[in-house]
Length: 325
Image 1 (tube, rainbow, N blue to C red):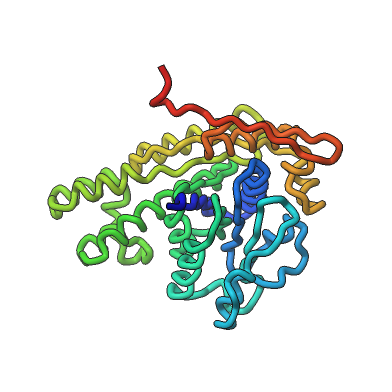
Image 2: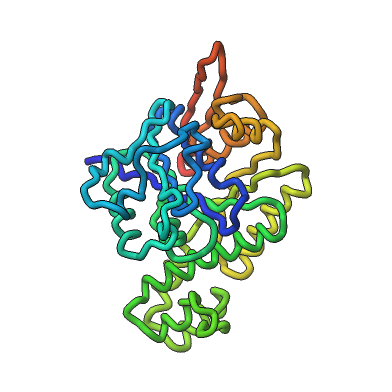
């Protein structure tokens, strides 16, 4: 029996907050630590992840799903030059590729689930449309990214809320009255009185008492992780705590704080040189931050050291709390 694939989706609602950079470096770090990893660009219509890996013109990508039905899916897996890491490009700038329909999204999700890997990382596009949210919700580990700015924090809160309410909506597809309460895709017909999970619980107890247990399970089983990117000072770190409190207060969801990555010229330089910063300088402060985040995601303690152009990885598996005295 094969182990289930760990699918990690990295989202956040707002564009330009560093999702692609963080996702690329997470993939590189996990691959270097010995996992078989596939990195995927699901930002259809504005894909740029390949450039961060130094791949100038991907031969194949998800656009093959849109333009032809003769592509061998294995051809989509591109070499990255990094041991254990394969890459699937997005749809590029093909006309209409950003507005693909739900059937094509279903085809891609099916393709992802059939892949052979230890971990698959999905770099999500910006926004909270269903294409983005459904990729996030198919993951086994959802990671949300924010920068310290209030606009980013609020967008990330909206992203978390949209993902939760989308899960609830899909679980109760057969009940139109419940759909009206939880499907807020059209603000003109949305039930604003059920905007928070507290209000939603009250309405369920009043109108759908037989489904309250299912609702509770959906909320309690929704536990995304949080990364704060581009941290400059101690005040910036508070953005993560503020977001956790916001989500707990209005959504009654426990978000796991995975860590932060400092603002650094090392990161910007690595982007210009099209080399993941973890590989360019594994002992830099941003790389140390990233190793902590990988450790939180994989329950390991990692240390990367670069000598004579080669990266050496020390890896120790943490004991779970259930085994500790």
